[in-house]
Image (cartoon, each protein chain N blue to C red):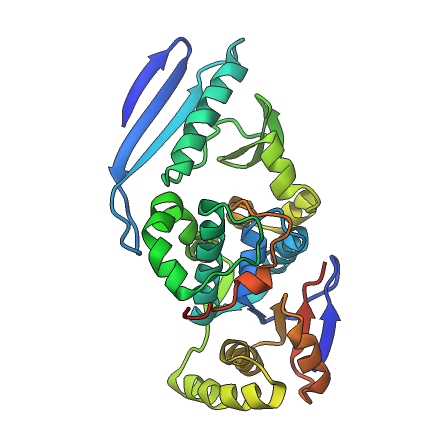
Length: 190
Length: 144
């Protein structure tokens, strides 16, 4: 599998599957990947690339935004402070009271891109592809030592995309090991 | 939509049902100060508008972009704020935070106006923090 540490100006072959960390990375400011993530998204839109997203990526994005809201509301000083589903359940009402609109940000963004004419596609598209991704996911979990979510992202990218854009450094090792030459891992690095 | 006229500015306040797919209850409240013509109170009114809109944002009422009628050139600065695209006006400090370091003009030249607007509307729309690891926070959290 090809691997590219992305910098501005480097072409990204379409279709492009986006990991959740890229969607979040371009929507949330001030972190060290923000400028690159936003520029990358701009390049994809400017080049009229086919942008592939999954419900899994949206779900992970929602967790990220909920976590971010929790950190802000609870005045957490560390951005790696403990956050779990049970913490979320206890804070859910306050999160939505204070930052309900933020939780809609990723969905609204994808809808706006699509309404503006960008080629945003949701994957998997068919029952047979869903079954194929379901078959590949546990194989990739075992072969590349990935979490179920990361393995599912890789399987979706493998089935549909030419480029898999991610901020997850685990995929650098995967790219080195995987035999596929059709998919490129495009890594957002600081 | 209620309209209050103060001097040469028109302030619009609207309250409408909150449309949400996630079941949030309540109402959407928005406010917008629109210039009738330039005057010496521009900066004061802009700060007034920013303060109220900011307060509403913090209370969970997402504010629509301010509509700017005249739009002849991109990134036009007005009242210390920047017109990023048709209908999208941000404060100068927010502009630097969200769009600084991004080749906006280069991207704009290669996008349709609709896509450029959709792009700039959303990038960096949520404030984060420097120590944030976007990959770490995007993971599905543990149950406990």
